[in-house]
Length: 118
View (cartoon, helix red, strand yellow):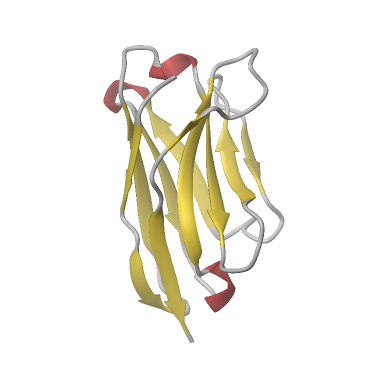
Protein backbone atom coordinates (compact mmCIF):
# COMPACT_ATOMS: atom_id res chain seq x y z
CA UNK A 1 0.00 0.00 0.00
CA UNK A 2 0.90 3.64 -0.42
CA UNK A 3 0.01 6.77 1.48
CA UNK A 4 -1.96 9.29 -0.53
CA UNK A 5 -2.49 13.00 0.11
CA UNK A 6 -4.97 15.02 -1.95
CA UNK A 7 -5.07 18.77 -2.42
CA UNK A 8 -6.69 21.32 -4.67
CA UNK A 9 -10.30 21.21 -3.59
CA UNK A 10 -12.32 24.31 -2.92
CA UNK A 11 -15.37 26.30 -3.86
CA UNK A 12 -16.01 27.45 -7.40
CA UNK A 13 -18.93 28.78 -9.41
CA UNK A 14 -20.63 26.67 -12.04
CA UNK A 15 -18.62 26.69 -15.25
CA UNK A 16 -15.36 27.11 -13.38
CA UNK A 17 -12.34 24.84 -13.09
CA UNK A 18 -10.28 23.15 -10.41
CA UNK A 19 -7.28 20.85 -10.49
CA UNK A 20 -6.93 18.19 -7.86
CA UNK A 21 -3.56 16.67 -7.02
CA UNK A 22 -2.70 13.46 -5.20
CA UNK A 23 0.83 12.75 -4.06
CA UNK A 24 1.80 9.18 -3.26
CA UNK A 25 4.55 7.92 -1.01
CA UNK A 26 7.01 5.25 -2.01
CA UNK A 27 9.21 4.40 -4.95
CA UNK A 28 6.84 2.15 -6.89
CA UNK A 29 4.19 4.69 -7.89
CA UNK A 30 4.64 3.95 -11.58
CA UNK A 31 3.41 0.39 -11.04
CA UNK A 32 0.08 1.46 -9.52
CA UNK A 33 -3.27 2.05 -11.14
CA UNK A 34 -4.70 5.32 -9.78
CA UNK A 35 -8.28 6.44 -9.47
CA UNK A 36 -10.34 9.44 -8.44
CA UNK A 37 -13.62 8.74 -6.66
CA UNK A 38 -16.24 11.05 -5.21
CA UNK A 39 -19.01 10.86 -2.67
CA UNK A 40 -21.81 13.38 -2.43
CA UNK A 41 -24.00 13.71 0.67
CA UNK A 42 -26.53 10.89 0.83
CA UNK A 43 -25.03 9.11 -2.17
CA UNK A 44 -22.73 6.17 -2.65
CA UNK A 45 -19.12 6.63 -3.58
CA UNK A 46 -18.58 6.49 -7.33
CA UNK A 47 -15.57 6.32 -9.55
CA UNK A 48 -14.90 9.48 -11.55
CA UNK A 49 -11.77 8.65 -13.50
CA UNK A 50 -8.88 6.21 -13.48
CA UNK A 51 -5.50 5.85 -15.10
CA UNK A 52 -3.69 2.55 -15.31
CA UNK A 53 0.01 2.11 -14.74
CA UNK A 54 0.40 1.72 -18.51
CA UNK A 55 -1.51 4.94 -19.15
CA UNK A 56 -4.98 3.78 -20.21
CA UNK A 57 -7.68 6.06 -18.90
CA UNK A 58 -11.32 5.63 -17.90
CA UNK A 59 -13.99 8.26 -17.26
CA UNK A 60 -17.48 8.07 -15.86
CA UNK A 61 -20.06 9.17 -18.40
CA UNK A 62 -21.02 12.11 -16.22
CA UNK A 63 -17.57 13.70 -16.53
CA UNK A 64 -16.46 12.71 -20.03
CA UNK A 65 -15.28 15.72 -21.99
CA UNK A 66 -15.00 17.87 -18.85
CA UNK A 67 -12.49 16.08 -16.60
CA UNK A 68 -8.98 14.87 -17.46
CA UNK A 69 -6.89 12.49 -15.39
CA UNK A 70 -3.13 12.45 -15.77
CA UNK A 71 -0.07 11.27 -13.88
CA UNK A 72 3.52 12.34 -13.40
CA UNK A 73 5.48 9.30 -12.30
CA UNK A 74 8.60 11.36 -11.65
CA UNK A 75 6.64 13.38 -9.09
CA UNK A 76 4.56 10.46 -7.72
CA UNK A 77 1.49 12.54 -8.49
CA UNK A 78 -1.86 12.00 -10.17
CA UNK A 79 -4.01 14.93 -11.25
CA UNK A 80 -7.66 15.51 -12.00
CA UNK A 81 -8.32 18.58 -14.10
CA UNK A 82 -11.97 19.50 -13.78
CA UNK A 83 -13.47 21.98 -16.24
CA UNK A 84 -17.03 23.20 -16.84
CA UNK A 85 -17.93 22.26 -13.30
CA UNK A 86 -21.57 21.76 -12.41
CA UNK A 87 -23.35 21.91 -9.03
CA UNK A 88 -23.84 18.14 -9.26
CA UNK A 89 -20.06 17.72 -9.16
CA UNK A 90 -20.14 18.84 -5.53
CA UNK A 91 -18.68 16.05 -3.41
CA UNK A 92 -15.70 14.89 -1.44
CA UNK A 93 -13.12 13.66 -3.92
CA UNK A 94 -10.82 10.79 -2.98
CA UNK A 95 -7.66 9.54 -4.57
CA UNK A 96 -7.11 5.78 -4.55
CA UNK A 97 -4.47 3.30 -5.64
CA UNK A 98 -4.21 -0.38 -6.47
CA UNK A 99 -1.27 -2.44 -7.61
CA UNK A 100 -2.06 -4.96 -10.31
CA UNK A 101 -3.06 -7.74 -10.25
CA UNK A 102 -5.01 -6.55 -7.19
CA UNK A 103 -8.50 -5.61 -8.38
CA UNK A 104 -9.72 -3.54 -5.44
CA UNK A 105 -8.38 -0.08 -4.70
CA UNK A 106 -6.81 -0.60 -1.29
CA UNK A 107 -5.03 2.67 -0.59
CA UNK A 108 -7.10 5.81 -0.05
CA UNK A 109 -6.45 9.45 0.65
CA UNK A 110 -8.29 11.53 3.20
CA UNK A 111 -10.41 13.32 0.62
CA UNK A 112 -10.77 16.90 -0.50
CA UNK A 113 -14.01 18.86 -0.68
CA UNK A 114 -15.19 20.29 -4.00
CA UNK A 115 -18.18 22.63 -3.89
CA UNK A 116 -19.73 24.07 -7.04
CA UNK A 117 -22.25 26.85 -6.60
CA UNK A 118 -24.93 27.69 -9.13
